[in-house]
Amino acid sequence: MLRAVTLAASLLALVFGFYLLLARPVQVMTWDADHLTTTVPEKNDYRIYQTETDGTGQRFAWVQPANALFIVPVNTNNGRPVKVTVRARGASAAGGPASTTTVLANGVKVGEIKPVPGLAAFQDFTFNIVAPYTDAHRINLTFSTLAWQPPGDPRTLGFMLQAVTVDAGEVW
Image (tube, rainbow, N blue to C red; front, side, top):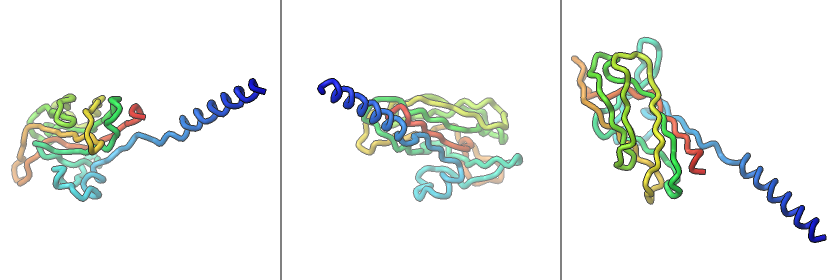
């Protein structure tokens, strides 16, 4: 009898474990330039200009050069990495300077975006971020790069942002 109960309990634990594995919510989220510039109420705080379309039909938004902010809502309690991929293109693709963009997560440098100078294609830059704990349970990404103002354009530009993808699967 005890053996049957133990076997049943083990089987139940195994089934429940598989259920948890399969029921785990999808933890990959992508925000494209259209989403960032049209559906984020605080978009001016993010310092991202309105979405544009280039000559090849690709949508993007210029990011202002200093302190542009993107908030990643994740659990910062467990110390596991969050993979953040930024799809970007440098200002040099539009005649601006070839520059490096510094990426900070909650004020700590996590890497750099170094687009190939003059390359028209968007490139993916991936960062594995272990952010320090915050009560807000989020990662504040800050981008800082050289300022550029094209002739006849009143805006101060930094780099071109096409999308940000967050894979928080490791924090589960």
